[in-house]
Length: 121
Image (cartoon, rainbow, N blue to C red; front, side):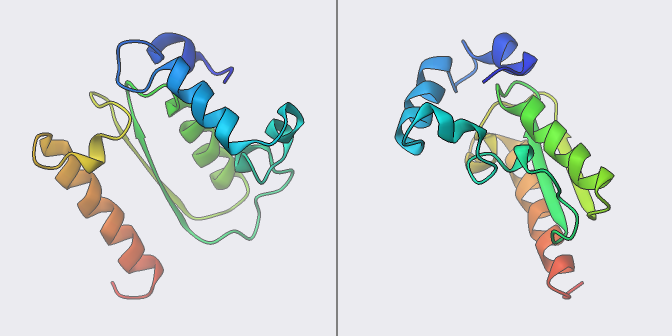
């Protein structure tokens, strides 16, 4: 909850600071759990050896900086990673395919990444 994207996009872009705080409070048993890599894989000491990853971020998402940082750390650890950022989109856009055209593109790319990772293409 300290990245710049939270400060810039936590109000007026669907996912709000209050909603993120509510999820945070539901997810963690205690404030100390926030430092546990199992709560935030970005905090893991070493990401080497993880399977290939597809990281999807949205330009107006308060969590976009965390996704970008995770993709960068995976790549730095030698993990094959495809990172796709959709600049004009908000958090959760990919689930709105009937009203957001970029959602179909995002899901197609995610499906292609999975197919490749599973040896099908």
